[in-house]
Amino acid sequence: MSGMWGNHFRIAIFGESHGKAVGVTVHGLPAGIAVDEDLIRRELRRRAGGYDQFSTPRREADEFQILSGIFEGKTAGSPICCVIPNTDVRSKDYDKIKAYMRPSHADYTARVKYDGYNDYRGGGHFSGRVTAGLVVAGALAKTYLNLRGVTVAGEITDGGLDEKITAAKAAGDSVGGVVRVTAAGVAAGVGEPFFDSAESIIAHLLFSVPGVKGVEFGTGFALAHMRGSEANDAIYTENGRILTRTNHSGGINGGITNGMPLVVQAAFRPTPTIAATQDTVDITAMENVAYAAEGRHDPCIARRAVVVAESAVAIGLAELML
Image 1: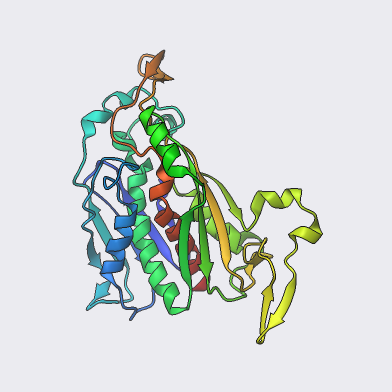
Image 2: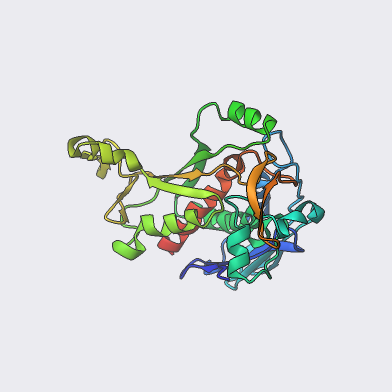
């Protein structure tokens, strides 16, 4: 199982939803960077559930422990290891899914891939719970980027989402959403053509986030329905800087940043685990069955995923800029 990524800003995530802990190790940050643990705490709080009617009732304290790599408040140059204990688990809710494959979840594919030895409780390593480690790595990446004048911010772009979530939750269902992330202050010249393009690196990370099924930069898929005269970003100069009048390209040309804000959107599918009855298979008996999922789940994962998407973009930019 691959839980490692990166060449310069290297991360390794670990843990399962109902295991003892989740966490991350981060390699590659230069020594001497001041680390604000309150920032990490705030970022984890943004990702946490259990605090409003729009998220899972599962309420984790996320009291993280930094085991290595930070000394006297600054990066020591060695690998940073952070562990986040799991404290609010109800594994009995998942007894049935050992046999009943949840539609559109990883239950079936994980069982096939790992011969049934995978931890299925709460989705195991395939759970959104594991993104807590990504958020820690993202906070460290944002700290590095801030020193370079780069800020990363995300938002939900679907209108009326609260009402949609409330209606879906009442019906035992779920909804998806779109998260837009903007990185401001990225200088021109970051990235490579083709395989290590800025889009390739960032899209790789965003598609690694559970539930992401679509990624677009700038105006994205809508560009396919525009003329070149509409889609092209007219170039001009102001105060010695090269700028564009529009940003349909999302701040990237030829895989390399052009100095305009980097803009990317990620589409999150509706949460697969829902209380409504669905058709599935009892894989132990190889029989068709009807199943209504138990457990605690988000009616919309996109809301809590804003900080996760930000983290993915920040990690990608740190990789490109280091």
